Image (cartoon, rainbow, N blue to C red; front, side, top):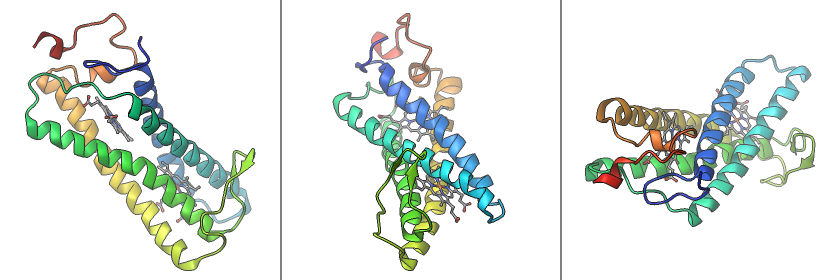
Length: 195
Ligand code: HEM
Ligand code: HEM
């Protein structure tokens, strides 16, 4: 399977980034929601540290994904998609790109402004403090932003996933299938090739 996308198919690297980030965000959301319910005890610290390290990993993958996207233009929309729908999808994708940066960055900002402990990536190497120490105002803002942006991500991603499923089950086009990792290896013709 080709690494790069072409006019009708997503390349394997674009698919890898898409689905890895989806799975990690799902795991991260569950960990985050459970974590804030834990008693504020030293025994909860490893869970927080894991959440922060996994979040930084998602941020790094988002940077790599966007970098790769600059060299790897997306395929055309499948044939026959109305203009308003293509525009709505693009807008949703831009929002999702913004959110996979904004959610982890707001978490990192909150951690920096709280300045409880130095931030390490999986105990391996330290990460910079974004605020240069404790900052109560930024802490409060970033805490609220992290939670709010997370819920915005949930809503936009749910709409995005619903649109993909409608394309698959209602319109019966290739939109979802051509993003799936195990498809297109044998080169099943996407519908736009026969338009
Ligand atoms: C895509 C990445 C991330 C997702 C989806 C995510 C998701 C969440 C969620 C759902 C919560 C619970 C919010 C609540 O109900 O109050 C949370 C809390 C938290 N997150 Fe993240 N997070 C991400 C990245 C990060 C990063 C990179 C850091 C820090 C480096 C971080 C630090 C925190 C902290 C410290 C809390 C606890 C907030 C509090 O005590 O109110 N998160 N996160
Ligand atoms: C956290 C969840 C998700 C995020 C952040 C996300 C993000 C994105 C982004 C940014 C794109 C545009 C790619 C580009 O133009 O470079 C995209 C495309 C796509 N996503 Fe997702 N996605 C998520 C979940 C899902 C789920 C659950 C499904 C399936 C049910 C899905 C199906 C698709 C499909 C089919 C495309 C290609 C659309 C097209 O060809 O126009 N995504 N996704």
